[in-house]
Image (cartoon, rainbow, N blue to C red; front, top):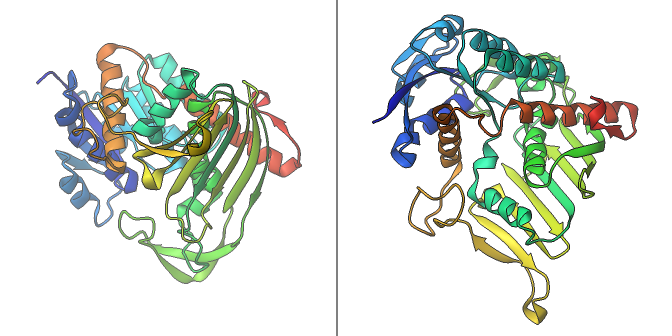
Length: 387
């Protein structure tokens, strides 16, 4: 069965449930050298947290995450808490010599992310940032095509992450809508994902010019956290100020000469989780959308009258990230991406190497987001390297 790797999870919300799915299915699918053991879930003593821990397969539940990360029988700490406590969670875990997986964005600001990176380097532990979409087989296939030169010289990246879950002005003032807890709104929450996808596929972003907008500036104060879904919330008659962006739009220039456009909004009516991109090269193009995540659209130059985009089903044993899943053509979904993510984390520990994406990737993404925010304030282009 291999060596046991005892995992302690911080957080019982949406991401805690998603990460639990990943650890629960990692060994059966990938037969990893190390066997993840779901030892303990630490979460606030809300009504449903202990039930969630039990239902998701954790051996124990506790309310003191600090005590959990100090336990000798915990090897890996998985941080799925709200953004504003990521720094504290990671610093404590690194000081205790634990390997770390931390959800994105790493911190509420660049300073916090850099502090986290310094801490894990000093401690000599393995640290991974949870940019889960890198684990989608179709995206990994797109990367192979780009790196092999199949698309030629890359000229355009067009990325958009569109949701609509806070369009209702009566939707309550959850922590994600308050700067002190979330750091930013759509920019950091979903803009971080398209930024990392762009870096993963195209390369470093050198400069940006962007604008942020808040459409609903006051909302009912939250009276209940409800369940694990973002929409399971209730508001009161009293209102509070929204202090983050509802939408972010920016342009970017890549180090390789390509140009890009980026959009992140939670006000795109009818879009539930529309995370997509199109990449145009001198010889071909690819496009992808998470809501049809198993397909990569591909156009190749020089195909004559029948030319045009065609759908490539990215589910075969030739596709990176799909090798150990189902027979060719049997699709996967959101949860399977977390299984792939946990495999990368577990393999990195077993092989004594840095996991990918690492905390360096988290910091570089945070640099871009900070530059976009500053660009919106000063209404000018910003060099990412200056942050």
